[in-house]
Length: 95
Image (cartoon, rainbow, N blue to C red; front, side, top):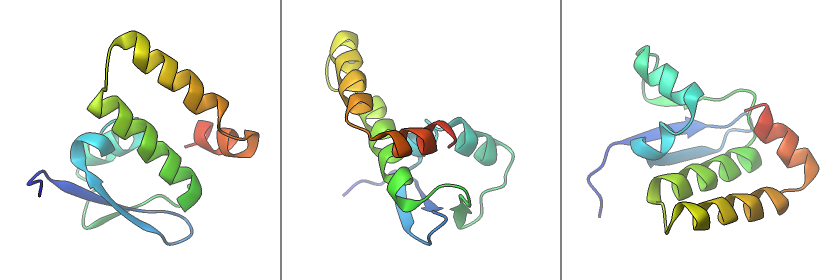
């Protein structure tokens, strides 16, 4: 079991996601909140649904974990974006 620090994120529809801090800090919004000391027990993300947050976390995890060369990551990014339906893509861009 990992001893890394966890951050809890709460989506607009009430879902709680506990993720590693290194993953959470991939998001500039969350990184700024942590830097500004705005983090208590749970970070509420009032404009982001659980469905969208799941995709954001998946993307951030992949970029923390790496998983190959830069070219492989670039290919993964392209596939990830290709497989997201348009409404979810719009929500991701607004996250």
